[in-house]
Image 1 (cartoon, protein in one colour):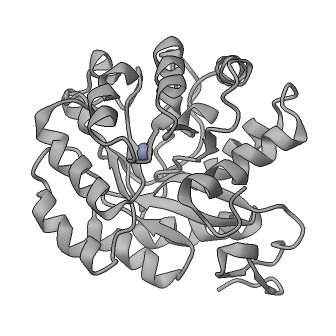
Image 2: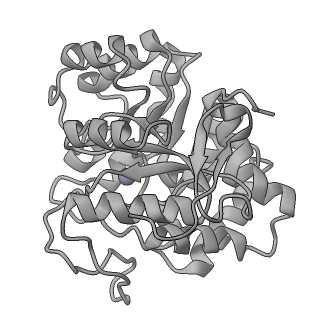
Length: 306
Ligand SMILES: [Zn+2]
């Protein structure tokens, strides 16, 4: 139970009640990269979070249970006034349970890694019933499936049919799992998908880090393509994150980048991710608001989108 004085406010045009003790003091944030007690590898409670490049000093201690992940994630959302989180996870029932236990706070979405698990046709029922309102994280790269692999085509087609936003892991880095292939993560490999589905809203994890040139080309060419700034806010050195962010901003892409925490089983990283954006002294106040809220509101077509 929350012990602080709880204040119910109305989240502007989002049209959803937001409950939080400090919700009135901090401007709203949308977190475009959250997971329901999920990390793409087994680990015990208390395990430190990932860091790159090795050798490096890992931070944090993993939650032990799904209930702890839920409680601490919601606590952080209240503390930082995160009014919405794009939520996925391998346990699809758990994703839907978090969504129903915190109505209006999450955009529930299935984690898709191996093609056919779950089959697109099975997921269709969830979209028809409104149980899922996003697609992905599509994480085929963890098993060497590039975005243009025909095995993933049914998932993009389903997202296009239901007009839901798509999250995809397409980057040079990812978890240390045996099937992961950096070469399968060039953002250029998304091109055939975007050509086939020109209206599909797709966002790329970590804005394709460190494939800056490829990501810039794709974002210039395909206006519906956005990037999130998530794991790289706390997994790589701060200097490397800020250099990448500055390069994207200097390229004129500040209206297409969205905050995410990728908290997985380390909800304490939500605050660190926010601090990584706030400490970027090359960003204007308006650019920070765009990253924290405005760009995602536009991408998600919320009522108050600008
Ligand atoms: Zn993720």
